[in-house]
Amino acid sequence: MTSIAVVVGDGIGQEVIPVAQDVLSLLHPEYEFYPVEIGYGKWKKTGVACTPDDIVLLRDADAIIFGAVTTPPAADYRSVVLEIRKELDLYANLRPIKGDGVDIMIVRENTEGLYSGIEWQEDDRASTLRVITRKGSERIARAACRIARERGNHLTIGNKANVIKSDAFFRDICIKTAEEEGVPYTTAFIDALTLDVLMHPERYDVIVTTNIFGDILSDAAAYLVGGLGMLPSANIGDSHALFEPVHGSAPDIAGKGIANPVAAIRSAAMLLSHLGDIPGATLIEEAIRLTAEAGITTPDTGGKATTKEAGAAVIDALLRIT
Ligand code: NAI
Ligand code: MG
Image (cartoon, rainbow, N blue to C red; front, side, top):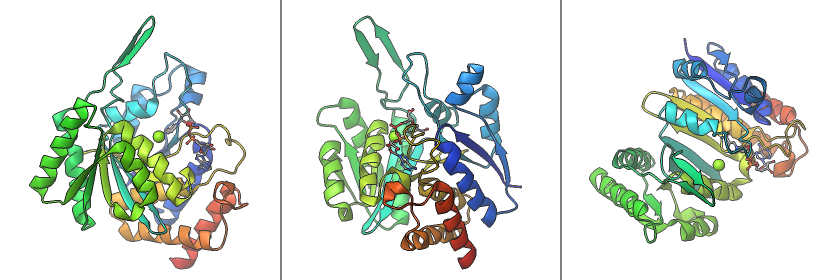
């Protein structure tokens, strides 16, 4: 029995994840879904956003579908997403940017760098330690090379080695790995690279980079394909996998029923490919395409549909093509 842990989380996570779950259970009625309550809402009720038992439930699943969690600007509150990525060692964050004339895979290191969580404050000075390890860099470089090879294409190593020594370390390990793996590569400074990706997306295929740069680059690249409501992601480790939209809990539109469910549905498609159902994932992408073609989209992408209407349209399209 395939078991899927479902974390709706906070804000629009609670609106888009049920749609993604409906899509999954339509294609796989045999999947067993179980909810895991995690997030700021839980913290407000119980004082804890994610318990050790929750982590056990996540570990037990064959895959996790995750909405988003709110991180309030409080000094004593640590991001739960970061904690889960570290606990389950989900070191590769894969963020496909796909749309008209654009087909890029951003491979973001997901467990270290500036999101190391090693930080402290003294009076007028706050510090965060940026940690880049050989192990962390090698394994993300290998994952990126594997993807570049599967796609029969090349790798761009995004970095800021000109000013940050730990980035020169990361870049050099990526270069060595790409050479060992026989994958053609180029290197680029992340600031200029971000602009070039927006201006000439056709030049890029797989981009590997460190944690924060990958985070920022992928939100910027969302511009190419209709915004954050369109971007799915996979967080993959050697033993666990979590699938989530790139966007957050979007408090500005939460509760209005107008969040775009496409990013969450596409995350479900990535979950299916991960579990081996590549045809299922392709069908979902096709259903999303047909729905957009029929003009049934939410306001962020220029339409008038609600989350439920857009979700129902994707499910109708799936029923037609399966
Ligand atoms: P956000 O991604 O939630 O929202 C940014 C903008 O994009 C907002 O204007 C929002 O309305 C819009 N947007 C995002 N997803 C959309 C969708 N599906 N449909 C239509 N519009 C959409 O980022 P923001 O505002 O920086 O963060 C809000 C909260 O989410 C914060 O507490 C943040 O910490 C958290 N967050 C959580 C993440 C996670 O759980 N993985 C990731 C990013 C942010
Ligand atoms: Mg982000």
